[in-house]
Length: 126
Image (cartoon, rainbow, N blue to C red; front, side):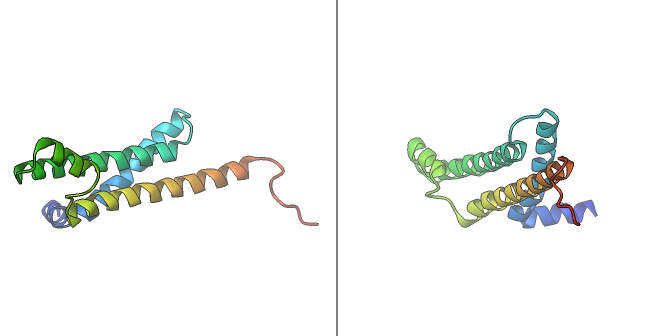
């Protein structure tokens, strides 16, 4: 079972990044909610998105340097997305989309719970 999971993650890095971004975003948002930070869902999604962007940009910069680009050119290529390959973009876009989808779901659940908790917000029949 574990071997199958590892093989899947190696064969599908964009999907594995997205699947790991989901619990990362949910866990970070839960902690930020408990700490009563403002906009915890968005902050969590932003941190996860930034983490994956930095991870892929760092890897891409390393690859570009080994391909013969000078240090400045490789850094700019990694920073501004030129010189990126399609797998690099997929491995950043997939977890970013997953993180923001989780943040949106948490926001919707929290806003509905807040509305339900406020007295006088339900329509009365009669």
